[in-house]
Length: 215
Ligand code: G3P
Image (cartoon, rainbow, N blue to C red; front, side, top):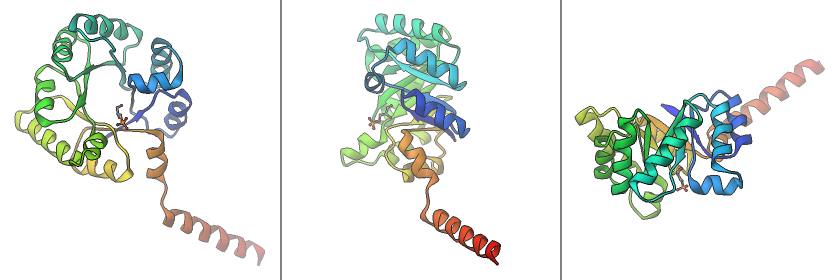
């Protein structure tokens, strides 16, 4: 399973890339707005650090405008994936961009039926937002299970990119369901590494080593 960082913060991207654990980066308009920099500047900075897929989201509403935005983004670096929303215009733009050889990540997906449409439109990635599904009292993981099954049934090549991840457990569940990619905020990378028994074990080793040295 590939691990992506869901952020537009360049310091975090550099930090976790140094761990060797960032296979790609996903951004969205909210994450870019939080950074207070231009989309173009930040996406170019990210793509210079990360060789894997870097998702940059369109902000227009018509298919024509989305295609124009997507074509512009694709010029910024070789590893750009254009994020289009799960709307009729977004699907039309997905098909048009895909036909031009530009890879698309269809975002804001909340049902297996939507994921089926994204795959049929030619999306390279589909982004179901599991945390937001859980927030509504439904099961984000059940959604992933359904999408993985539908894609397996029909041998779609679209990769399932699990997004809106809020806990380390969701990362494990994503891997168990054999989804292709899990994108997560920096805080989840930190939480995944931590375990109280690792800390306790390390403390014990340090104490025993010190005792031996003092003898
Ligand atoms: O990048 C999209 C997604 O991961 C957003 O997550 O936490 O805002 O639902 P969240």
